[in-house]
Length: 451
Image 1: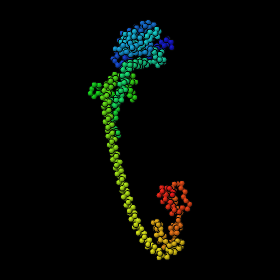
Image 2: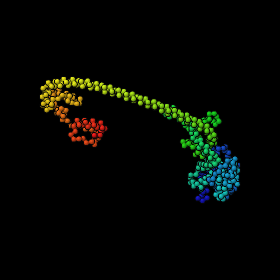
Image 3: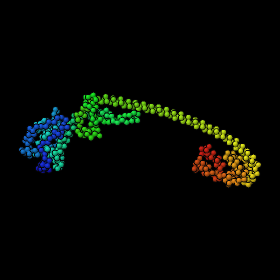
Image 4: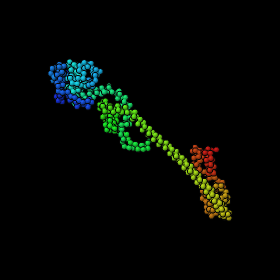
């Protein structure tokens, strides 16, 4: 873009936004400068116009002002400090700490005349709309229709903010980082407030939630002063106004609080250590109490189990003794009944005839070895003595016992044998019930092994 085109663009921007020669920057940077703002008087404004016109190609201010644009370079030099290490040599030789108008300044904005390449310094109060607008248009390639007074003010504010931050960090940044990193964890333990209470299963008591203190309590120097969290104000991720982003460097209050907190940090660390030690002792004591209680419960459990086992053994012994006694009684009763029935059977011709009819010898219950078989034979004697016919099943069982014609093994016996010997065991052909019973006894005795 040619110079003439740039000037035409600037004239169009000025007509569109109604721009004036100067910008009221006092309200823009007052919160950033950290010192009282003093705006220059009208005499300085006149001096600015005269001196810049004298340095321009045109001798008419209306045209001369359009020759100047901001370069984008800004330096911050506090009034009481030397500019030798900060300003370029060209500006050190002219008027450091002064605007071209003669007004004392801390903020040094560099401008350049686009016609003769003369470079000058103006303060933040005299960095004119034209200068910034032309810089945005020519150097930053921002379209003319997007350049507004507000955008010019934003550029000035951001430039001031960045330079002040750079200056601050060059002076105290290393110390700040060292102290902040040394106390940040302590800060989040000390500069907190009590939230809602909750039951802590570790300490076995109600504890308070510890919340970051976002606002200071009372004033510094007062006995009950409690500062706001340093981490919260500086770079806490939940703080949308954290200073690391809004300012780029800590404000005076935060810096002073950090220094005081760092000096007292050992005291806070000692208090935290004592608090943590008390909590650890309590947790350890609770753990020891729980261990002792658990041992007591385990001993009680073992004692109760042993007592229940003794009770079970006594009950089982009583049951065995009662069963044996009942067995003796039953045997005596059966013997008496059998004797009576034998006598009756021997004198009963019907029973004899029935034995001949079924081709079995005369028998008595005593020929059986098992209680069930004895009861079965007793029933058969009674049934045959009364002349009742036997069912095929009854006759088969009778001949199995009396004539020694064994019955085939039952399905239940076969199932039990396979359970003991394994499903792969092959049942012998023609296995009878007697042999099946013997095989089951053997498998139970040998743990499932075939002898």
